[in-house]
Image (cartoon, rainbow, N blue to C red):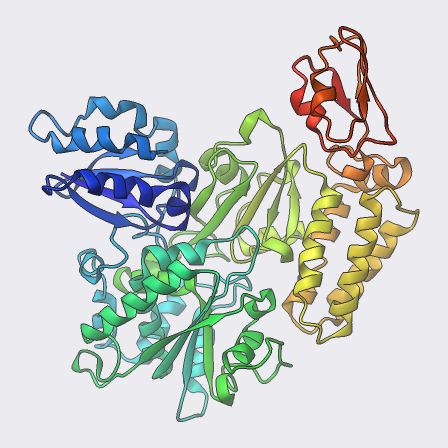
Length: 586
């Protein structure tokens, strides 16, 4: 019997390593085999422990705590008494509803995540790992590019540009030295797809990069990964060392005459470095600021040599496409958006985590079918697609298909795959303010439209959420949005207005309520909250007065209390404390 602990960043943060350490302490005689894996995507159920009998998964245990370690060990170590049933662990077993989270997905980029040991190259090779690069070395570069063209694979970093076209442009560019670059910077708030792939299946990234390097004629490659991903960096370093030792990396790979070396660059995590030319500047040791295009990186990229950049998810699809054929990948998805897409499902959702689905499913399919709907009995309000560069899509558009064209028509974008779900308690004006605060701070400052325009928009949105909005503010915001879109140099500035434009488009009534009535319909904006006590419901228990940190509540025992609005700091302690629902927020 074997216990496998899910040790992606989410699992470790939830306590997986502590559980494993407790089991290892008991396993002094080695009665149970112990292993690790990465994130399987069910982050909301971590820590996860899988029980294997031989190579068969017989039990998945979820939300396991350190206190559960001993009984898990005793049950599994018991072996011969019907161990595959393990009835004593039934309370920890994953539910039928939660099993649907994975059952409703189609996994290609995530096909190995949470299923193999990320630190063991043999585990990757056992699931057909590095078979694709062996196949590719018997093909011509042109044949490889043609297979990617047939697949319809588009860049999964956000722009959705045809992968084969970029590879072909780099292949045909003149230059003795060519470079391949993986963008693993992943700066969107709420996005963690690339991190999970590197932590859970680093060899799938390496193999995809080797195939791309062979196709374009690159002998040197880089993975530009944010320094805030220490576990991903450690596991990628181990994977690169193992691949090199196995003759799969470095000089004369597998005796083919093809050579390629991959190195890691830990970046500072600037959002603007998601733009490929800004990333190249950072890779060269300069401040991450976009370059004017053309020339494009395929012609003049890293050190002014022909270069190709794709993100982690894009590369993670490549080996599967080579092994299964481009037509098999193209058979999934829609006419204009082929294959599958990975999303980081976060926010007010019951089942948060990583989701990979064929293009063409609807937002409703993902949020309510896979994600299980809104948590805590809440009501769906909107979903932010594409991170700070994306837009808010309202309830009446939940049946929008997930593909580049359909999402673009809503005013949002596919982006790298962030999907932040919001409920009725979310203020859409404040949400727009949050994203503008992010993009204004992350602007590199190179062009005036982005540097100043995002700052002015943030100031206006802040003023509106504080109840100081004025007639004409919405129109001014729209003018600024249009100016920034037209004048910004790179994608950060050009897409920064999207959260503002979509919230105005779909939630104009909330802007009007803030400006004309100094009222936040969602009761989220602190400056516009007013706490009061309903005398008909107040029992005079005095608990709210005792909990108030500023002494704003007064009253005698068994008599209705009152809140002094001049003292109230709107912390919400009174609401959380009152057992009778007497405190209201207006």
